Image (cartoon, rainbow, N blue to C red; front, side):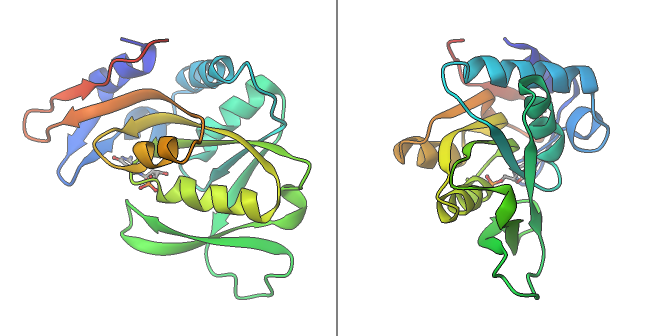
Length: 195
Ligand code: 5GP
């Protein structure tokens, strides 16, 4: 069992509706030592490829993406949510269905922050149905930047996001993959991974 799986077992809470609550260390209070370890582990897993920028989506991806960017000493850009009422000339815009809020969000990045010369690593806290990752990949494509891979803290393996990305040939590294979980008993099982 790796350090993140151990932390999830110790402090994660399984909620009805297939939701894993990690508010005590990731989504509300943030355990900075854990963030540093996650940043270092994602750096290690992508040590064979070059990237110069980390891209995530506000708000819960920012802490982890910042940790990855910090240990690599590169910038982090977060896609913003909300109406692009103003002109979209200066922005790349994509649509993502939010698993947690059950609604469509428009997300955007300003064009100067994702350039055709950028080699991008997408980082997020959770991968569930893959909507957020797909929208971020769309932004990278619109910018004609290069997608190096996707680094995730917690993948929920019983939802289709991970399989979709792998089938599309995207290099995906998830530090913890939840295979099954049960709200009533609190049981959480992880997928075996070689590391
Ligand atoms: P996806 O777009 O892959 O369906 O969902 C990814 C996003 O939804 C993540 O950025 C994360 O914020 C949120 N999310 C999905 N499932 C969970 C969950 O079980 N727990 C928490 N805390 N967030 C989740």
